[in-house]
Image (tube, rainbow, N blue to C red; front, side):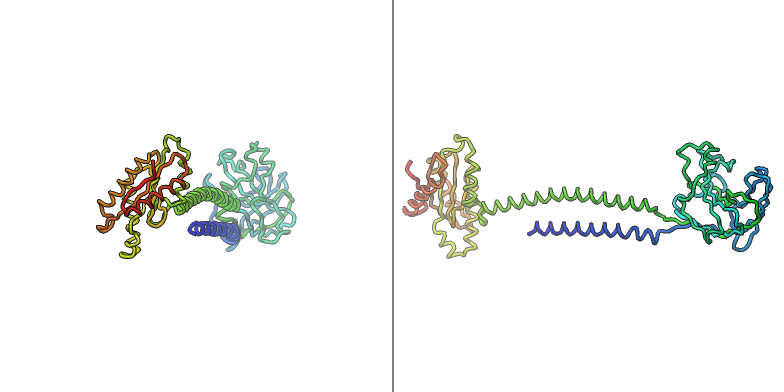
Length: 423
């Protein structure tokens, strides 16, 4: 029953843990989707250092100026001929030195931008500084992570994913960037630039920028899923270890219960001596001994004289105590290799290996005398009658029957005697 309860409890614990894992697996992505959000908000005008970008360095003559309002920054420009790539734009310095902003954990961008230019596109460029390919005094060496779109064909705010940013091929070729650095990199953004795009059409227009918001999660989705995968893998390993240890514990418990059942089947519950079943099992084990260590075998059958009178006079509780103390006394007198068996009621048997009949009679007499000399319960001493028989074979039942006949003879002669079969 105890073992069954342990198994049921173990299964319930496993079911509970499995339910928790399933709940985490379902709840974590939902929680991640609706919470754990973080954002960076740039509102314009801004305190970041701001400057105009134009084509003058390339021989162009485009004109641009900044107009500040309470809620926006306006770039008014006139793209003029003179350069192969007429452009105008705004540059924001997101860092004072090479230590910029790490935007790698953001996954989307919204840009509140309106333009009156129906011809030219606009670029959003995040410039990244990395000593592997950049020098702080050469802005062109900063990696261009950009996206290009036409404002008048998109509603404001314009939204895009960080993964939509690309690195232009002209920059990779011009800077001879090694292959390990050609992918977008937003780990150290030092500049944000919003210029006119690659259409380069001569035109007069305005760009109005009011806000940019970068959104992301405190825990990236791939990190969350890896964490969930790790939990499942860890739980699987923990389950296997637990199951292994539990199986060892279960086997020990089963072995212990088996031993207890075997003991209960082979031992007398009151005196803890061998019972008949235990005796026969033990005899089967002893049959493996060499003959010189086994034969001859002497059997002493004992009966407590007038035991019924003890029960009738003092009660069965006292009778039980007498039986228990009796077996303790006998066990302390016989040899360690001898077997003590409760044959039934107040009858007991001692089986002595490698013991001649004469030696068995001497031992029986010693047992009888020890019980007379020393009380075994509340100054109460008992008397026993003994029958002794011997054999040179494993015919235990036959020799017990002979010892029983000798016991009957001892009782017939007035009890408190030791009798034996003929030599």
